[in-house]
Each structure stands twice: as structure tokens, then as C-alpha cells.
Amino acid sequence: FGDEPGADLLLQEARPQLKQPPLYKVLLLNDDYTPMDFVVQVLEQFFAMNYEQAVQVMLHVHTRGAGVCGVFSRDIAETKVTQVNDYSRANHHPLLCTMEAMP
Ligand code: TYC
Image (cartoon, rainbow, N blue to C red):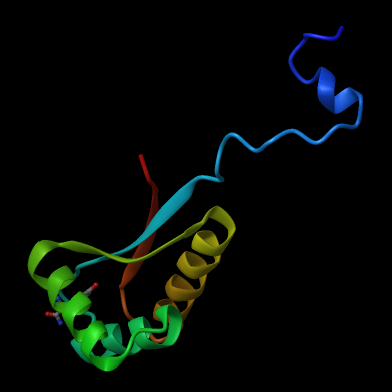
């Protein structure tokens, strides 16, 4: 079995990592109802942005329809999406956060 794929794993040898774990963009979507200051607060709280960065991203989303909040591993991206959507719903805003695999 010496030249089968994975044979080195059966022999308990280390193999150099050929693929990095996939990365995901976390996106905010625009809507007509969520207050701008709430979106800025979300970007500061959940994405560690300073006020100036947060305003810039919020205005990008407001004018273009969607925008990137950050790029993360799948687990971290899923957690951000859930936290932002739960927080928005708890505050009765329709703000939507989603994620997208990077090419
Ligand atoms: N469009 C919203 C307004 O005019 C502001 C807003 C910005 C909402 C970004 C969502 O992801 C968003 N109040």
C-alpha cells in the first residue's frame, strides 16, 4: 500500500499541509429600518472596529446594499452571524448578517 493516498497517515507519519482551511466573508446587508447608529454599534462591538471604521463600513452598506465586516474561519464566521442576528432581533431591528465562502 506504500503509494496509496494516505498511506503515510496509516504509518503515523506527518504530512505537510497542502490546503489552508477555507475563509468566509461576513457581510452586513442594507435595509430601510435599522438605525445607522445601531449598525455602527454592531460593527464596533462584534467586529472590533473603531468608530471611524464602523461609520465607513455602515455607509458603504447603506449606499451599496451590502458590505464586508471581516474575513474569518467557518466557525468564527458562523458565530459572528448568529451573534449579530440574535442581537438585532433582540433589539427589534431587521438588520441581517450573512456569510459567503471566499473563492
Ligand atoms: N439604511 C439604513 C437607514 O437608512 C441604515 C443601514 C445601514 C441599515 C447599514 C442596515 O446594514 C445596514 N437607516
